[in-house]
Length: 222
Image (cartoon, rainbow, N blue to C red):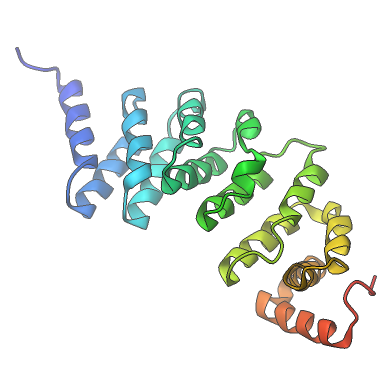
């Protein structure tokens, strides 16, 4: 019995997502996003968890955003419990792109403080997109526990996430500026400088924070 052309196209696309060639996987993801079909969602989510190429992962995320959130969001939330860090990270990234606030309860403190930097960074970005009105201060308090964490890119990601919440972050920044952790103090100063002057640039803010710490002025301004 001959399969209908539609089913044949679906099978071809699903097979393409598993190809050993990254360019084939990229084209398959593009095709799936161009002609959305709920039958693709499970495979797209599965592929996100294991896809080694960034540009293909980005296309997979785009393809998922082209499908109804009522279908994609529950599958992505399930991925947040995966033991595979990439599965959690990519699911969070995709949820941030979809922007459906029904996913907010799934952005837990455990994800916001995940031991894997990429997962945590993705959780921070998702959280500032999905946080409901009135929840910004509580989110800022959780994010502030991560001040001083990681290398430059991780610290910059956290600063950007905090700044996206606006002036509500100032109480937790001031508390960190006078806290016992020198890395958190420094990072809080950097974030406060960027909040005041977004055009200053991260490196400039870092150098300014070093100067203030050396002068013993942290937390004394404003």
